[in-house]
Length: 197
Image (tube, rainbow, N blue to C red; front, side):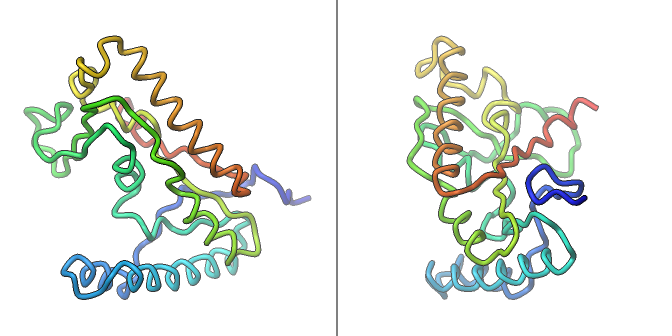
C-alpha cells in the first residue's frame, strides 16, 4: 500500500537545474533589463513546469525546485535581520586550495525574523500542485558553521547561548508561518554534515 501522507519512500532534496529561459531572465534582471514582476512571471512558469514534471514521474511530494533562489541557502539566510553575507576568505577554508569557497555568514547584530520568508513561495507551489507540496529550509547551522564563534559578534552576543536561542526562535517562527499557510512537509537541508565524513 502506498502512503498518501509523509513520509514517502522516495524524496529529493529540492534543487533542480534552472532552465535556460530562467537563467536568461535572471541575467536580464541583474542587468536591469526586466523588473522583479517580469522575473517572477518567468519563475512561476518554470516552477509550474517543474511541478508537472515531478508529478508526471510519480513523485508523491513536489518542490519548486528552489528555482527562485540564487542558491539553496543564501536567499533565506540573507533575509534574516542582524547578519550579513560577506565575500572573502572563509575561516573554514583558510590555507586550502579549495575550488569552491562558500561565502561568509557573519552575525553583526542580534538576530531577528523579518516575517514570513518562504510562505509566498510555498503557497505558489501548493496552488499549482495536485500532490503534497514541500519547502526546503537551509539548516540553522549554515548561520555559524563555517566560522564558529569568530563570525558571531561578541558585542551582540557576549553569551553564545543567547545566539543559539535566537537562531532557534527565528526557525520556530518561520516554520510556524509555513504551517499556518498549510505546509505540512518542511525539509531541513543540511549538507554541512558531509564535512565530517
